[in-house]
Image (tube, rainbow, N blue to C red):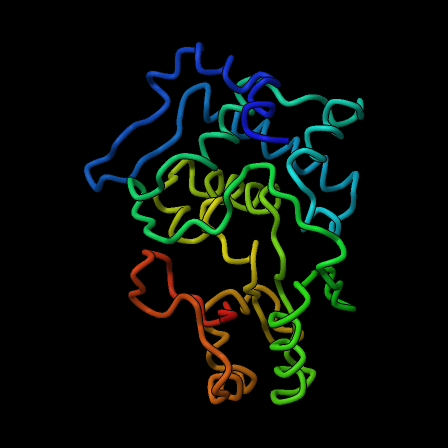
Length: 250
């Protein structure tokens, strides 16, 4: 579905609502979502979560936005997205995130981009997927060169999956979009949608998504490999936090 058709489901109608007080700038220039749009953010996260539960965690990693809308309209336990929720979906995808301090490149052209099942592979024991070709080849080499104590912690992320993570992080940070964009790339800008993946040490839990990962033997081994690059190094030009677990696929 193209953008014009997507908008016909009610997204443009949301523009007629009064969102003049949706944003508030603090002295440090951080931008917050508040008021009725902050309330809608909770509803959006809840609805995306319902879709995830309905289709399954693994499938949600590569599901398209068209499919998400379809299930929302046709499954009573999910319910259709409201105008406010659709407004937020479009805003988070199409707006320029430089105002939030994020300077990465666009990786996705369309809100309704489809990831084809024939192009991806599910990685056993992880619940995640990788693209065939270079991403899968690099991961297989990592397992061989580093050992099977290293594991895939996040692979392919479709627009809905990245949208869910982004919305969830904004809510965790009390509506601070600027802070969230430094931790989770905006939905149109994630390299997980085209190639990259995250790795960690088995049994290390959430510490895999912190600098503690650099203390593991697995990390020390992987950075020695000439085919491995870390996407978000310290003080990177994209404005993203340091992510030693994020493997750049070139």
